[in-house]
Length: 441
Image (cartoon, rainbow, N blue to C red):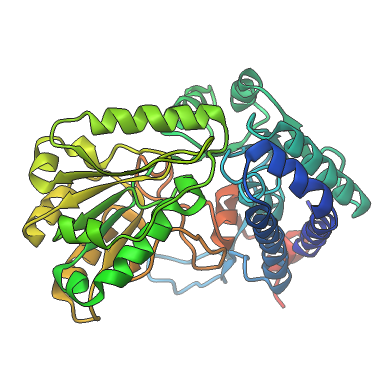
């Protein structure tokens, strides 16, 4: 029942408290995740920024979804009553924290921020990869909310797979936000759908994020493209959901030769490291795939690996380009003609991003590829790289299955709030009984 201004105050209080606790939180995150201090500090700033952005948009009314149709006796289909539509909070939201972003997609990350902005209580299922950080972050958030006058139990935390599954099926839960693996997300999605009262499950799952380098793009920007790819492929040791896992190139030999030195930091934990090695080995063993380049990691760090195949091999085994390897590895696909790329892209069901590395704005092949990628991707990129997902009003982070379970929504940016509010129309309701935003000014 709290209005936008009150919810904004709560979000600002949480953001300020997180900033004040950075000296405590970042060292714990460093110990549990193996991520460097600079990365973690930047991610915490991103987390508090998105809380403040939601607060600012609540204050300004930019997140209102209000429509008012006054009574009209001459409406063409017959007299129209006075009808006014707004949105209301969906109810308690269950958020599954992610492993790879211990601040931005965890206890007080984007799902929690958007649910609180929507006016929903939140229960966070903590990720086992950073349990102590999760408890500390939750304590900071709860104290800040209490000091700001928020209701008790607005933010809660649970731990363990069984507790998470049970919470999906708890009749009090009205929606679920999830960031993680396709297998785990599909299991929880099925639990949500199998309830006597099925609920929305907003899952952000797997993606290989194809990149298409056009012949003109390679001819004019080859060195720039190779350098940009190397940085994007290994950023965060490849543990980003937007890591470019597949790159189509017109000259694989030249592309591989142009790449700068490659290196990666440690994986988040041993389980993720083992999963990376297993998935990589399985993909490398497929017919038509070879290891083109392997850079051994230092002790405790993963190898950086580039696999190589051809468009012909993809035609015979389309799963080559849809199999996600979570880590610093990518599959280089050599093609002879744009038509081969078009045929391969048709095998994608859905992906978070699709990137075109072209020449100028008049690159006809690039424009064709951009149009094709729009059919399968939630975000299409021209001559930039998919890693680095800004938080903004226009951001879209999602896509057709298996990129997400709800392709009409986003898990990043202010539009993420729409997942956790539902529309209600008020017909012929007296002005004093209307929500404030629906009353005549």
